Image (cartoon, rainbow, N blue to C red; front, top):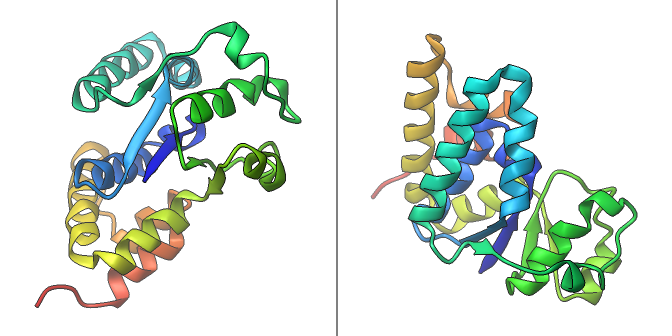
Length: 185
């Protein structure tokens, strides 16, 4: 399954770490465009130029880890698409041109299901996606989540639980699933 990651799921960090962790584990093939990565960088600018430079480095690492992920398209190709918010047209263009099955986004209003269906796409909620992966591969998602939790604890200097961290990151369903069901043989 090929899924285009919208900017709003790359930033916040915990959501991005979970999605990229699942992709690295082979649960889906991620896609994005240079413009999506640039939007991510601009969103982080409010935290300072150093944070924006970190995003540029992380974007380069993502492109290296997933060399098939960056989708390239022309202005002419983009011009054939329409969405209620013209500033999101580049996302549907990248998804269609990249051969995505869906767009992972939190932005339901600006990606109407009917318009996406006309292009052969679905709108995918990140919490629902990760929950579905957890249902199919609970051990895989438990490993990814533990890595994200360890990193969050290390970087924040706090002690988070999976449930609390994932609730804060707007992924309560998968967070609750991860702590309520046993994994392993």
